[in-house]
Image (cartoon, rainbow over all chains, first blue to last red; front, top):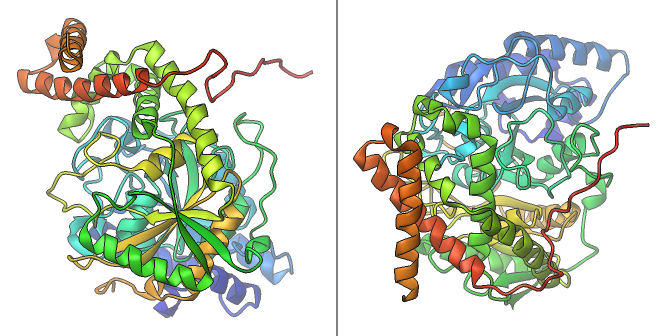
Length: 467
Length: 70
């Protein structure tokens, strides 16, 4: 099959498959070949799931030929961050050397739902070890090596869903599943110039996903467009008895076409403080586009220690989730040297401080909802800077070396956000724009992002040298 | 004591705890890395403690009673 199916959005691929102008088997072979040939260049892949992909693709082809079309993901290849359990002897490594041979005998709910939607699992994708929860400071923090950015091989692809970002950006899969505790979907999406959707906490079941922080972890899609993210979210969203944090709130992407006319956007006061100059310029230009489809107003929030709230919750829960690994000293087996000792510091978190953070989370959630209630979305740069150099230190709000009020609030309060590319920085790497909404307002933030992407072409630009 | 002195003292106390528990497996430069991380944790804790809450401010993640079906 010609490679002209690469960088074609999921919606279009789905239409071609439905019309039987595109074979799911041939499509899977194209992406399996690219994953095996190009994946190592970007350290993007842990396991190419060729046998499972071929079986699923053949089944999709037969079903569609028989008139049993499941929907827009039927026959579409994808990759999953390697913290989602997969059966059939496929390893699930969590990006960490101590688990590189570990195999589960069941599929995570998100994997199962995608199978029910007819999607074709082609790869388990690389990630920062343990989703970055041990305090890594630089890109070389996975047993598969540092995630390499398809836009520049001396730049990082992001973290912690590194492979999910780079695989979509390099045309190795049409979409991928990532996870975010704080920044791990929006960051690789922004660094790699693709769309990434962080759903509302409780929208997508985490059953079968590695737990880093029980009250912060979310699963969501990365794809070429915000529209594609919506298609994927519709397949993986929903109540799951195996994950008691999920709720029964149906999500239909097709209903997210518009906000009924003009949008009302907010910008947090000082949100670009600390951003690189090019990031600020691209954001200002993006606001110009948004003013064509709505209004933009400055928003002030109450003075609360937003970053400290979410950081304290994250550190405490991660230390508990990986207590055995830390206490046993097995963290010595991790790749990043700083992951060998940083977690011991978390013994310094007092129970009452963790509880204070949880209580303040409620205040933060109410304050964020108050600010968001009259708006369709808060908008901000997706990242404060271009991707870090592979040999450099990663600035991180989690470690306190950068500020990220949007990320602290969005993750601490469990709010949905979508990031889309909005230009390039001084080193020629992508920058991004994020839309964050009230809880359960994925349709609204997706509508806004789609409206932005309908007026820009950043998402239609792709890295060179991908053959 | 001033606020910075309080924080410094708390950092040293917490570092002593970590040294007692895990010191045998940490090189001196690693222990310095732990100190840096503890400084961030203690500063965050002080920022949280500085915010007054009311008795009615519950944790944002409520506990739910459990009962297996039926």
